[in-house]
Structure formats: C-alpha cells, structure tokens
Image 1: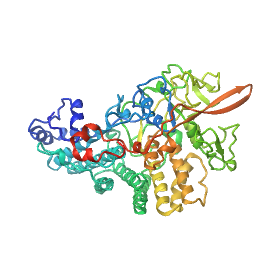
Image 2: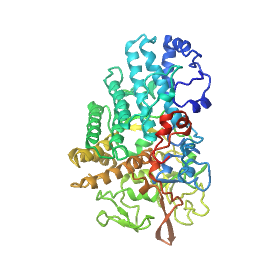
Image 3: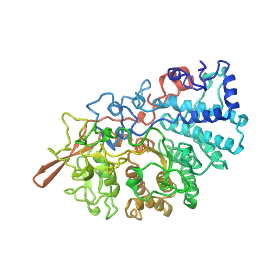
Length: 580
C-alpha cells in the first residue's frame, strides 16, 4: 500500500496494511483509475468501505459483551481471565497509549479509532471517483453514492461518540498534504456534517427506504440515514455536549426523530416486532413482506449461533463459561407489570445494599421475581426460572447457595454466575444446545427511535402527549401498562432513561448513554448481586457488592486521542481530550 496513508492515523495503519487488489501504486492514481474504469471493481470498492464496519456483540476479547463494562452486568471472567476486556476496563486501564476495548478483539476492526478513520478514507476515495466511474445504470451510481455518504456519516458518528470532535475530511488527501495543518472543529460542526450527509442520502431517490432482497443483506438504506441522524442530534443535545442545555438542540433532535418515525412507519414499512423476546431470537428476513419489520440494520458478521457456549448456564452440556451476568441494579430497574410503577425507587446507601422499595408498586421483597416487567423474564435467568430445554428437558434453575447453578463468590468461577443471575436475552432457550442459538447483532432498530423521541421531546417541551405516546408504544409491545401520567419533566426523564436501560439491555447503548448524560460516576463505580440462602422452602435474599469500585472521574466520559496521533498532529497535542 502507498506508504503515505491517506488518513489521519498514519502510524497505526501501517501495522494493519495487507496487499489486496485495491492497493494503489506510489503515484496514488494509476490503480485507482483502473478500479473505477471497471464496473465490478467499482462495486468491490464500495464493499471495501462496508468492510470497515467493525464487529460488535460478543466479539470483544475474550468473546465478551460491552455490557460487562457497564452497571448492567458483571463478566464472569473477572477474577479468572486477566486478559478479558472487562477485567481491564473496570479498573480504569484506559489511557492515551492503551484502550482495553480494542485489545485483541475476536472480530474485525478491533482498533475502532483506526477502523473508523479508514472507513472515512475509503468512503472519500469512493465518493471522489463515483461520478466518473464505469457504472452503466445511473440509478445504481446514485444509490452507491448515497450508501457511501451514509457510511461516512456512520463512521464519523461512531468516532466522535468515543473521541469527541474530529477533523472533517471530505476528500482524499494527496501525497503532499500537510497533516500538521489539521484542526479540530467543534462537536456541533461534526454533527452538522453528519446531518448533511444523511439528508442528502435521504433525498436520493435511488436509495431504498428498506432492503427487501436477501442478496443485498448488509447494505445501508434510507432508514439507516434517518436513525444515524436521530442518534447524532440526540447526542448533540445531551449534557456531555450541551453544557448550557440549549433547548434548540433538543428541539432539533425531537423534530428530526419525529420526521424519521413518520417516514419509516408510513405504509407500515417499519413497525415494532410483535413479541419482544422473539425479536432478539431471530435473524432479519429480507423480502417484500418480511416477518421482521423492526430491524433497520443488522450486523452481517459471522453466523448466528456461533459460540453459544460462551454465555451458557452452569451445568449445561458443553459450557465453556458463563460470560455476562446481569447485575442486581439491572434487575431492580424492571418495573411491576400490574401497576406499571418502579419496584425500587433508589438506594439509601452508596453500596446499593439497602433498596428503597416503592410500596405503591406491589413489589414483594420476599418474592422479588414475581409480577415484573415481561422484559425481565425475556432477558434474565433468575432462581427458580423454568428453562424449557436445559440439556434437553424442562428444568427450574437452582441459583441458591448449594444449588447446581449457585453463585460462587470466592474464589470466583467463570462457569458460575457472579451476580446471582444468568443472561437470557438474545439466546433462544427453545433451541436445543448449550444455551440456544444467538441471533445477529441488531445495530439499529425501530425501538431506539421511539425512545429517542420520548427523551428529546421531554427535554424540548416537557412530558407532553407526544413524549408519552412514544414511550408507551414501546411499553405496549412489552406488555406493560402506559407510563404514569402527569409526571414532572424531571420524573419523566428518569423514567425514560430507565426505559432505555431495560428495553435496550445488551445492545451497547448503556455504555454510551451514561456518558452522554454525564452520570458515569453515579452508575459504574460498583455493581451488586443477589445471594440466595435456602432453608427448606424458605429463601433469604442477601445483596452484596461485587469487586469493582472505581471512581470513574469525568475524563472517562470521552476517550483520549491515541498518543500516536497526538504526537504528530499539533492541534491534537494542544487539544487532547480533558483530563488526558
């Protein structure tokens, strides 16, 4: 590959360069001209842009989920496998020279900083050449252009969520470009660029609203542009990037998300999947009349069902490890079905060992798993839960002390729960096997848009009819009653944040949400679990703190710019992210 790499991350990219048909010659022109003279190679170049979308889901090292780096779960490798991503992350190992989340990832694109910049570079090269490329059908040319613009917007949003504002680069660099001239724009300017890219793709008549052909699986649609724009504007309005709480930013997020929902649900092009649990146990079917009309973009990375034994329950045949175990804080977040009220209103101590029970909710501390939000039963295995095909037979889980699936605290076991719970969401218990078949990761789906609208509308205009309607659509699908009426703006904010937590559990939102809300110091310093003691038919429930206890100062809200770039680009060195 040309030794003058045409993206910002010069040093890091050299390590990842491999020869391929799209490598360019030293003059930076010849081979690219040949590529875009050929119809098939032009399409192959667009596929190369797509290939920069990294792995998510269970592909963090060592076959771990990002949720274990939040207060929603504790990874069972903690205390057993020092190389596990969450073992390192929860101790605050992040620094300008090392990012645990990018360490030995099992999927592709482990180094997100480099990967997203490479994606931007490849998109820029494609967009600079598509107008004159050999694409006989003009509608294909326009569609390819729109997809490349959405891809560029995607890479920018994923990049700035982690690292803050980054230089806006719209054209390929030539070999004489002075990288020292690069300047960091404002976060608002980055958002404006992402919105512009999405708007142009949405206005592009040749970009479809949804993908309806299985042969086109993995391609971006207008719907992806809509949800990227919604997410970008929501982040821009959030406290991390809106310190003055400028209501105009919230209004923009609300208006554009409302427009997105209107466009996507018109003609029932998109709609929520009828059953919450079934949705996450399925893979999107792409045809003109699909069963799944909720998925906007599913990561086409690997086969469903791979490595199901990495999140298996203790005692299951073929189990390798337990993986992510839901926290007590997550369990406390699930409301009561009959009343629609929070079961736990908070904690009276910093260690979360003394919950404040909401007496009006109907919660019974002696029967804590009875009558909860149906999403709890679809997401968490708890003591006494009936597994329909545990090693081939129906079986009630024994997570009490001395039981077959018991919590083991000292020394911790990678095969037993660390919190008193096991992960159920995204694994189909009806499928014979270690823990059922895992579906592909749904990066974007319709439920997020409803939650984005509820949050933005409340912040812009208070808890009005539209805010309630958006969140109640989500609750209705789950089988929950409408949210309590007549809440204050602050009360509605907390309830919507909780709704995001339980609805989007395991989908990599919690990690970023607590950062954009600037509540990381309140949420992630510890997680608790539940130890159950059985004496005959009497069960005693004892909360305990897992070993985490890191303060998470505000510098961890934004990742540090890697020291390689900070050392070669003066503006990065002068404007390293706060605290780093």
